[in-house]
Amino acid sequence: MSEQKHDWTKQEILEIYNKPLMELLYEAATVHRKFHDPNTVQVSTLLSIKTGGCPEDCGYCPQAARYHTDIEGNDLMQVSHVKAQALRAKASGSSRVCMGAAWRNVKDGPEFDQVLEMVRTINKLDMEVCCTLGMLTENQAQRLAEAGLYAYNHNLDTSEDYYKDVISTRAFEDRLDTIDNVRKSNVTVCSGGIIGMGEAIEDRAGMLVALATLNPQPESVPINALVAVEGTPMEDMEPISIWEMVRMVATTRIVMPETQVRLSAGRTQMSREGQAMCFFAGANSIFAGDKLLTTPNPDVNEDMEMFKLLGLNPQKPFTKVSQPKTVEASESQFKDLGEKPKWTRPGHSIARNEEAKAKSKLVE
Ligand code: SAM
Ligand code: DTB
Ligand code: SF4
Image (cartoon, rainbow, N blue to C red):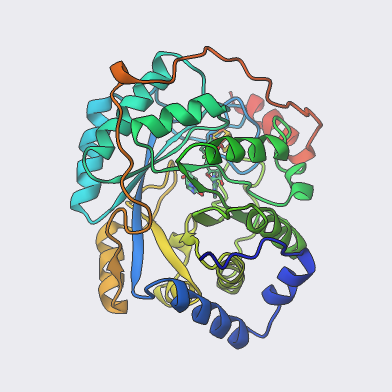
């Protein structure tokens, strides 16, 4: 029987977030132990299968084409390369591979077919496969499910209110619609957000309301600390303190007791003591590998040393949900519909995004 509560209010969540720290930690750790093994942490490896050149204006993102960041853009990776990287990840202790593409949305055609083949290939290595490819139709979600996709990552990123100050090329509602499309398939939902983008604590609580009131709640919730990348509109944001991360992780754990809470971007700035506090507060998943998508992440060997020090064990694949079956392309029941969905384009102006875009033109 699920013990998820789906009527969380912002007020209730704020009360949890603002508790005296020792109370908050104790409550979160108690919930954590009821639903999870506190000594097991899932290790997932990110793979950027298509880097840079994205048409969106997400204010935090180094991959948006309109800002001048010094990342190296790449076309879609070959399936053989993806397989080699997945094997390396498996050998270093990862049970999940998450493939990211700098796309606004998925488009039917040869590139999506290639991604489906990547999904089949990794599933056959007995690893959990996750994708994050932007907005998705129901048919595309079904095709990914059929290929053996385990999870789809699509972050809400922040509260509905603050979203308008971060992105102008799509709406919060589009994100919810994509999550809904994923839910209609057998693929599990991974959705979370970023803290440290200048949002108020109320926005953090607002994001958690949006996630926790989904029924069912996401199986996985990544909590990222902003990586402030030079050239993006958020390059000058002050880093968040470890206390804010711990509070966010603990609150997420309490309001979504069954979910895997992922300590995501920002770990290079965190001490081992800080990360240990996050694991105690209920984080039970990390991204491993010296790179996230385009920015640095701690070295795998250092992470494994930290696991040893803390007595943590990497989670085996398919401990929560069984391995999806893979259907070959030739036997697929879901056809390429060539859909051209109308995702929203609010197009309002965000001053700091416009400034970063103007600065980028001067650099070129
Ligand atoms: N293009 C797809 C999309 O936006 O859904 C998938 C890739 S996108 C890079 C995946 C997620 O990475 C974003 O939703 C955001 O939460 C996170 N992200 C991107 N840049 C980040 C940064 N500088 N710091 C922290 N998280 C970041
Ligand atoms: C998520 O929530 N964080 C990951 C993953 N899902 C795709 C991505 C973090 C990206 C950080 C910035 C970069 O490396 O480009
Ligand atoms: Fe593109 Fe995703 Fe980056 Fe936004 S977060 S600019 S959609 S890659």
